[in-house]
Amino acid sequence: MLRTLQNLLAALQPPPPGAAAVDDDHLLQLATAVMLVEVMRSDASLHNDERLAVLAALRSKFDLADDEAARLAELAETTAHAATDLYAFTSRINERFEMPQKLKMIELMWGVAYADGHLSAHERHVMWRIADLLHVPQGAYHHARQRAAAASGQT
Image 1 (spheres, rainbow, N blue to C red):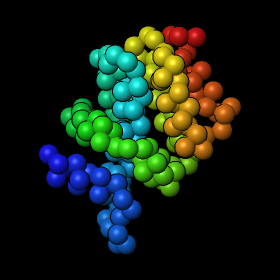
Image 2: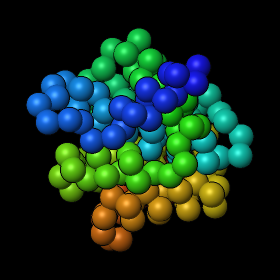
Image 3: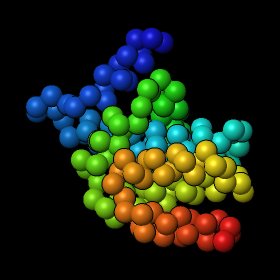
Image 4: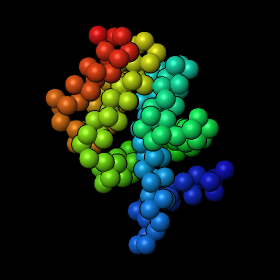
């Protein structure tokens, strides 16, 4: 298991010149999945609704099949548990996502936070921290939150 975690963490380092674009796409998907999982993990109690929201967000964001989204979410949970900070993930996202893609991701993350019907202070803090690392403007961040709250019926 230690070797697997080392391989995962090594995979988050910048790819060597000439590495396949597919690998970079997979690492971007993993980085995004880790952010969604971090929101799910930030709640004191894990609810199945949040896990389902993570899977739905991954299917929506990356057009994945159910089994692909489940494998990615499982890998993201393992990776998030082993990570010491979020910078390796947010820097990859910042390199590849334009602002509209980041805002969609923030909205999906809010959807995970709202999935259990309760928004904790820690979830709000994690969301703010990730949005800050992604350089999302405060107004856009709040609008994404409002859209997610309305979609979840929590206005």
